[in-house]
Image 1 (cartoon, rainbow, N blue to C red):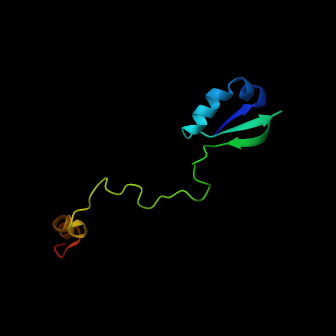
Image 2: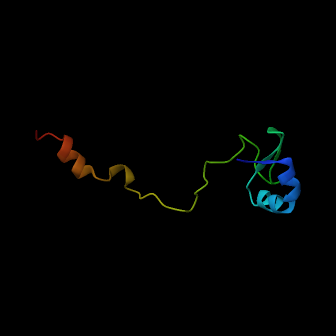
Image 3: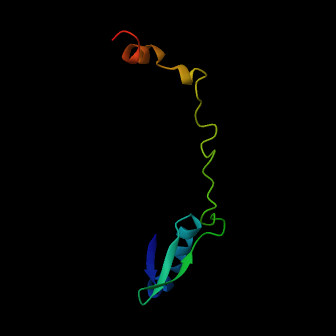
Amino acid sequence: MRTVNIHEAKTHLSRLVDRAAKGESFIIAKFGKPMVKVVAIDAPAAGEMRRVGFMAGQFSVPDDFDRMADDEIEKLFGGDA
């Protein structure tokens, strides 16, 4: 996460706010000490990010997924040694 000093934040506030609104959070520091974190209003809180199902509808799993490559596996580990 980007850290900017308070002078830079005052100088470039509009640009920084636009970037934060697009999801690029940043920290404002005073004398090198982090003071505040700027995030978009609709940004998910830490620990609330939803990961399960985030690719729903992006791909499909074949019906025979659990049986794929059975022949090759049988040849590698099967009875004929």
